[in-house]
Amino acid sequence: MSDSFLFASEDAIGKQLDSPVAEKPWKVMIVDDDPAVHQVTKMVMSGFSFDDRPVKFLSAFSGREAKDMIAEEDDVALILLDVVMEEDDAGLDVARYIRQELHNNITRIVLRTGQPGQAPEDDVIRNYDINDYKDKTELTKTKLVTLFYSALRSYRDICMINESRGGLNRVIQAITSVHDPDSLKQFASAILGQILNLLGLPQDAVFCHSLSTFSVQNAGNFKVMAATGQLQELLDNDDFSVVDPRIASAFGEALDMRRCHYGDDYFIGFYLTARGSESFLYVKTEREIPLVDRQMLEMYADNVANTYDSLLLTEKAKLSQKSLLHLLSGAIETHSVSASEHVRKVADIAALIAGEYGLNEFEVELIRMAAPLRDTGNAALPESLIHHQGAYSNEEREQMEQHCQLGYELLSRSDDQVMQLAAIIAQQHHEAWDGSGYPQQISGEQIHIAGRITALADCLAAMCRDRADRSAYSLKDALAWIKQKSGQKFDSRLVGVLVVNEARVEEILAS
Image (tube, rainbow, N blue to C red; front, side, top):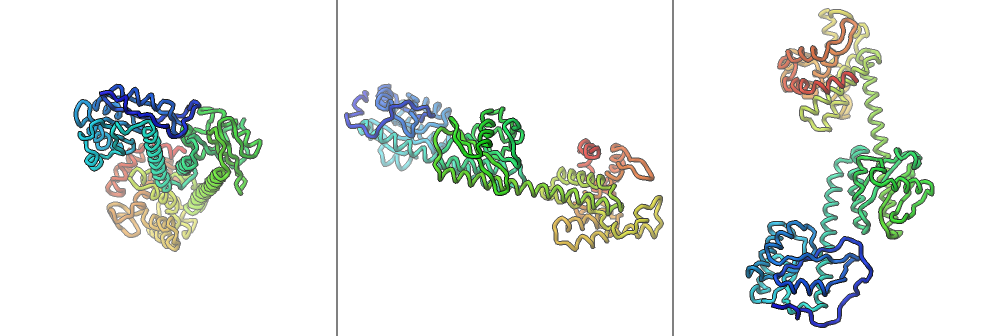
């Protein structure tokens, strides 16, 4: 049947753009077994554009062909779908396939039929997830143009909502990971993507930060804090020449000018925080950004930069605290500062065992911080006992063993979580799996996991360390002795973890 009558002469609605459009086109699929329908639809809608984007037509002449095509093209905006083709309900089967099998609820589906009785409108609207139903005799040029505007606008808005939902999910997921300067990158990138989407700007953007002044010749000082779109690879590589060397030049210009400005196809923001650090935002765009939108970008840059500064200071404070703990723990252990390296190795080996055993990251770091304080009770012992050479007398051994309880009593006075765990470790790190240890003679899982881990790490590190009365054991010999004591002095599961990670332990001991 010929459909040349479909487009009665009516005044076209809307003004079509005459200028060429370079943006990605909207994909519109025509599914009809009559070639004339394809020809006339394309002819009538030639030159149509929406949001400065043209239309690209795809043609399928049967339900089977339409299924194959829509499975390959995941960004079809609109389908003009005939009902009766190779079978009386071929079009309805295609609609069912799109919604139920491909789970595609975004593409707009408009049924067109020249035989309305074959697929009654009430039944189709009720039973199928379609967006419109048209008798082919209804589709004048004006109504077809109106249909395109309505369907493409709906598709655009749904895509924007889905993108915003996906971006919000990324933001929510990233919140829990913002605990150090590096994890801030994912969070800042998710937020930047949402802001660009909200402002209708392209997604190709990168935000950089520096705590000190730098120049384009010294591009290594650029610290990428966020990146979106095609610039995302900069998150793992601060070398702008990998992606686009013009970005580094743009940052250098912004630094020289010390203000925001536009290039040929980009906007560059220059921001100075209250703490004196500088940050730069590069957005690839060919249009001017309104003042109110630039203010939002500036607020974003200021908050991310200040958060980064704070996290960096926290990180430095944590490292300083860790170094101080190691130094003081070494001094307490031997009444000198020479044991600080041994203390650090005990902490690192304990953390390795804890992580490989299956404790979470937070628990691993608690053990890393607390393990160095295991011999805090030594501070209450006389120096002559600490530096005693040879075997202890019974009285001396009894006095030496008091350091476990003394350390517990000292550390447990603090409400700090690290100190509470350190108190447990100080009390239990000389207990044995078979109950033969001290001071409480507890056994098995009665011994706190942190105490069991630290006992193993401390013994290994001590055996592999030179002492006044003997040379250091090799790691191989030390592990052989520890395996003999597995299930007696040590938890056999932890010994297994230690043995499997021998290479990493060797790296720690050599550091």
